[in-house]
Every structure is written in structure tokens, then in C-alpha cells.
Image (tube, rainbow, N blue to C red; front, side):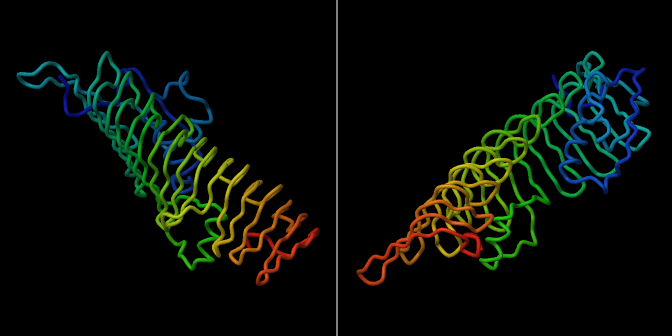
Length: 309
């Protein structure tokens, strides 16, 4: 039988201190998330690297522990732990380790509630940070892992989205977003959907917390880009629909059209050949129509502006 609370399961002789130089205010949101997650997992030296220790914003010292037994119920090893830095944990132990459901409240306002196994946040849980970030989903050995949903307060968007919003007259003042999908050891990993407050939605593959692999970027339900991503940027083969309706089909490199392509303009003009979007260079044929007449031009050189300008 399970009790309704859970605990931070250090042994009575266990004492763990983390010296750090970063303050909470100096950390980005993703740093705070990882720091909170590291604190939920066991913090023994053999289980955590120096880099993770340095990034932690918590100083955890096991102190007074109490084991209780409810009347007319089986022993549940319920306990309450108050740490010297103000953090509070309440819950269950099994063989001296955190196990089953528990809650951990950090002094700066972060809060975790959910399942534990062998001293780790493990199973279903919910992590809330003081700035409003919320993750609900699966944990594995102290990390977000598996299926989950996160509400992000300050999600960075790509250069293309900023440019597109500017062309469409859309405000970019809000960086709120929601992610639903798979998580790995380094954040978003696998298949997922990221929805931005300003109308953009990305559906596709993620790796290392970034858009990476095959995916599509939509604006208010209409596909803007569909193709390959690399480390958050358009990279590889894809199709891009410009704000004025111009269609680009071809290759990209770090968000820039680059290589063989075909560009179809709203008036029916078609360009087929090579482009270098960063240097505004083209080499190919431009076919245009005036009335019933078709005109073909050989182009080579700088066009003076980027396709995305």
C-alpha cells in the first residue's frame, strides 16, 4: 500500500554539499531545469559529473529525519526532511532510499512531485520552476525521459521566424511555447510538437533539445517550411514558402538557400539553377511569361539581395 507523500532518501550519515558559483538569476531557463532535475536525482559523486555539480543551484544537506507509522496501516516509512538551505522534502523510504510518491519544495520556489525509485525521480512526475516553467511527464533516474509536456516561458525562435513575423506584422514580444513529445538525456529528443504563442508550430524530430531531422514549420496551420533541420536550422533538402507566396524547393545550409533549387514566384516566373543565399549569388535560367510569350534568361552573378529579404 502506498502513502500519499514521499521523501528524499539519504542515509542518516549521508551529507552532501555542492559548492557553486552561479546564482539562480544568472542561469538560463534550461540551466535551471537541468539543475532542478540533478537535485532530484541522487547526488553522490559516483553518480554525477563535476560539470553537473558545477551547474547545480542547490546546496543539499541531509538533516533531521523522522520515520512515522500511520495508525491501523502498514509501515510506510514516511518522513519529513528540512535542509539547512531551506529546501523541504516529505515522503517515503524503502531500504533507506526514496521510493514511491513524493514531494520536494526548494526554497526559491521550484517544486517537484511524483514518483521515485531507488532514490531517483523515476516514473511519472511534475516539475515546476519559480518563473512558471512546468514539465509534466516521465522521468528516468532523475532526468526528463520518455513522453512529456513542458510549458516554456522563454523559448528562443530561429532567425527565419523572427523575419517572417516582421514581414507579417506579427508581434514577437511573447516567447511562450509548449512542447509535447519525447525527451532524452539532453532534453527534447525524438518525435515532438512545439507550439509558439505567436502562431508558429513545429512538428517533427528533435535531438539535443533542438529541431533536428525531418520536420515541418507551420504558421497558423499553413506549412511555411517542410524538410530537413540540423541543430535548429534549415539544413538539407526542403521546401520554403515565403511571406509573399514565393516557393523555394531545394537545398539549405544554416538557414540559407544554398545549392541546386527551383524558385517559383507568384506571377509564374520560374528560376532553376544554383543559389548562394548568404552571398546573394545565382547561376541558372530564369523563365518568365508576358502574355502568351515565354522569355528565358541566363543568369550568373549577384542578385543584390537574399531570397529571404
